[in-house]
Length: 622
Image (cartoon, rainbow, N blue to C red; front, side, top):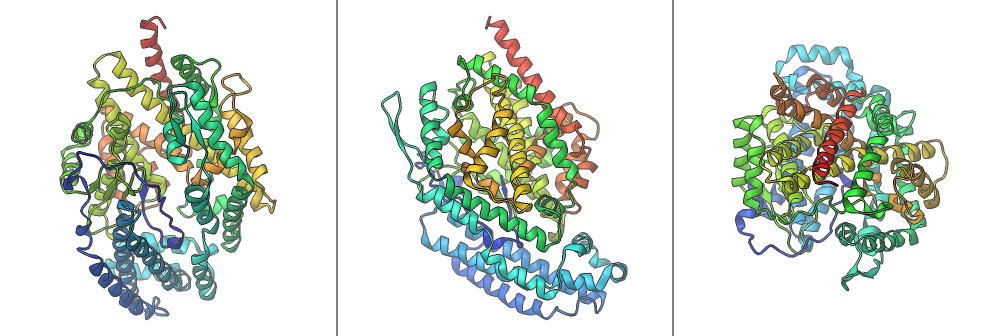
């Protein structure tokens, strides 16, 4: 997962402050990131924040001057870029200090200070859009010809000019910017309720172990080896959410209303159009994704039937989705994981591999879990003049190896874009962000399969890849379809209660999982699962996982097949950063995500993996 702050919604950024597990016995200083590359101390951070304040005062004098000449426009846009660049560095330091130890109050205060600074920046920048629109496209084009150094701002200026129908006057933009501190109230309430205040149930497993089922424990124990234990876990976990269905409904409805209001304020027909138009993404992408995922449900159902067979469960229940198809006992050290990721990246060229090795050796990563460390994994690539930072919670299994390859795909994307692009066009869109991580995972799978010792090890890697395709393509497409339905209702002025969210989700959940076809059974109480998904508080975000894995899988297959020009086109996409609209960048690299082709290719890949698994099982007489 790549993380980058948005000046549009900086005040709404919320860290998932879930504590990590116990510290690793083998952890050394070399396994922790070196935040001193950003600032040697909090005092140095404060000093740079003071510099930013002075820059904001200078930038205020740009108001009313953007149309006075090419050189003045360039000076102001350069200053604006330097402010944003400085803020990115400030935010990385603050947020990663907190991520490393969420129990340090000073780090939480620093993040809050960064949020306030971000809100000030958003307000200070609010006049730019309306003023550039008043300058007009004709004069902007003339300025671009008069001052060659202004060329780096061509794409950002085009984004402003293109947004003319959705931009307010100075007073309107300033008012909207002032409301930034109120954004995300529903999301904030949800984060606290779901992560801190929800009374989690305690259950006893068949082993005699007593487990308190918070979100972290649910993720672990939903994959328990005993089928009845898995059902107990889901019954209890979703029972806790069901008890707060009404409250969760209010928090999500609040977020959807916020999205609907901003769509109206910005003069969009609906929330979907507003969300996609930020990056000029055609609505056809969403339509193609949902249509192809529905058309390919027989492949998903084939996977579930194969899963039921390999797990020895009949009939299959929704609680049987998460245990691994093959239990892998093989441990991996962090050093081995790094070496495997480097070896897997060889098809991308020596420069790519050596840049990643430099990151491994240069303490760009915080590798192991420890008390109070933020859970999960992410990459922060917005410290433009420094380097990306990777957070891991490495625990020695193959999933951790795959996650490491994934996050370093993000890191290499940011590294290459930051090296190749000026700051103003280095930051890539979310629509592209997951492509590099997917390619790394696919190349890792190729590396592991090539050296697998026997069928058991092949089944481990193939099963992991299959589940990744299921979870990243079909599950995220299902989420996207749910989002499209609930946003459409709120955009139309309809109320939505928790019970209505559950009914809407239940219909889609059952269709995707083939309950009508007898593929599996789903307890009605599990239909409150929507309340567990935090991504729904970021409008039309999750579908980009599905589009990215489709594009990334196709790029990886072409690279593995040594298709002429495949590596160059792919690396060109990474180096392009945010220098053009993301759909156009991906299309230029050879994948059109508004057509069925990439989704069909991914589904074909999924079927080919199942063919190989079934071939192994057949040889074994199963």
